[in-house]
Image (tube, rainbow, N blue to C red; front, side, top):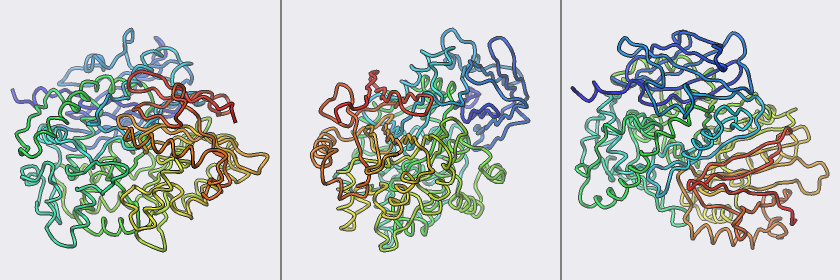
Length: 632
């Protein structure tokens, strides 16, 4: 019997995606075409039973890989604030099998099916970002599973949703053992092949067999003067002596690699087919490979609980740079260099295609052109070179990655990556995270809302000392060296976003959820010199499995308190001079204003959309609260 004969029917998912009273979206990947019935239950009562053929979009991405999106619209709204269950009864080799039969670990103890709650009023939200499989330390997503296990059949205590605020994968920073696992999955599933341009390899097969495939992918670019900057940018990693020593020698290149990565980080099914060894790695990198292998194996052991948790709570996502590549669209010069070269353009396009299929599609299915699915269906088993490039052009020109939820408070999720405000003075200066037109549209959407949850992958109100260091490096032309992309780095976007908070017709309560920075903090923000200031909370949790260098963050945290404390006159030299920013203190860490631990953020909101409790569930199982300050 060949390995493909023993492939499980479901190889990733199901992940519960957009869920509203009038819509239920489920994402999963199967090894053969999906033929299933969807049923929804309230207690013992069957509310819905439908053939998924009427609400299913499927894209074949391999001989044994089908990406499925069930987008069900009930004729009558589903009940809210009550415990519901769902079931997928799948036709597997001529027999009907339910989720418990297919994935026994997917069901919580005492339950017979996956359960969920539809909440139109958000009273509790889980959030976080930055999940790097080979980071040293446990995976905080396991804490989501713990929260859900404790709230089964308890609608009142159930979180309304899980918001992933960026860097769900690290396409640019891949461990050697993970890359080996990816290539085994590509072969096992027969994932779509493609031709390559602008590199020393001409197709997938040549790439995977090349001697530079592991830890030396920068050598795949022709050795010309014009390619030196590109090699450094995509594969060698930007030189970042202050913030990180990570490199990108194993940057994902092909669409098949990107798809395999998603399958391996969200579900455990394929790991039983993976055999990690150092046979593909030369002696120079063997020690590093073996160190990374320990973290990857530990990471994989927790994936059964990750898969279970994502099947029981509505999950929403938005990209940040590492979902595609480090420093994605950071400056005008970066964009001009990256998109003018066929190899780097393909790398970005393939990652964005994977993001759409595995993340973006489930956020708001109606936002995406139906022709995209039709195009991809025609690409298997191998992309046509011209049609592949045309698909990438469509992805790069797409302007609706952002989305919102009609909840109370309304949740508005920002795209801070693809519609940037270029610097007019220099191609080396950071672009604004959103351009004027997009910010204006967002302001219009906020008008008349009493409260809003705004999701910005990068904090709008960040640590001022770090932003000052970034500004200094930018002044000397080295924005890329320190990831100088924060809301205040570009004068235009900074002024517009701050003016939105000052506008009298925008919401009274702003809860801003962010990630990106690899540490967690919470700020209370008020307008100075104004009686009726909106209440603003900047709540940042990062990462699920990533942390800031401990000693460096300790120094930055201390200096930031000294230089930019609440009463410091230096605050009046910043763009946020009209804002009074009060950092909360993590309980048990009285000498700090930031928390450096992998974790999941949890926010409890009152009936007016104001935070009642802000905390981080650390990967080690602690809950660290950020209480409101009473000393100022």
